[in-house]
Image 1 (cartoon, rainbow, N blue to C red):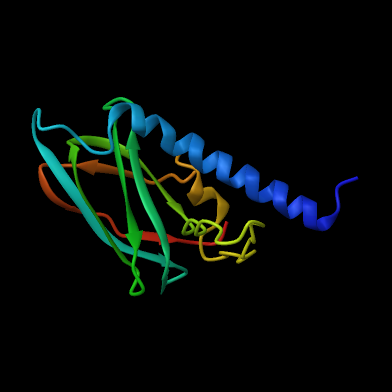
Image 2: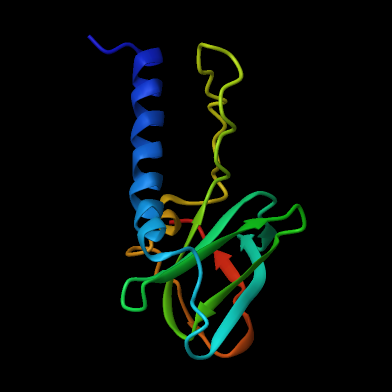
Length: 147
């Protein structure tokens, strides 16, 4: 029988597996674009219902280009992905910040809920967010709403 405490552990493991499944392919192709051809960077602001999101990660990935990168959301809601990205279309997703590695032998989950990052925005296929990276600096402001 799975108790509430064990369910939280399984839920955390499932979330970690989903995040790893999203990021692991990047390791095979590299984290950023290559120097072949034009590249760009992206920055912007992330809000939820008009209020700045104060922590999290914005990720962009293009399976067609084999390129992707991510940037942390700062306390004022801004983010920057300064890794050079090949020009083209990228799917965009927004994730809660990763939990720090456990310092004790027994992992402790913070169980912090990030209601300001709805589930649909955590999945690049469901987020509806796409950015077309052009050469040089690009701006993408992400205005999330309730699902």
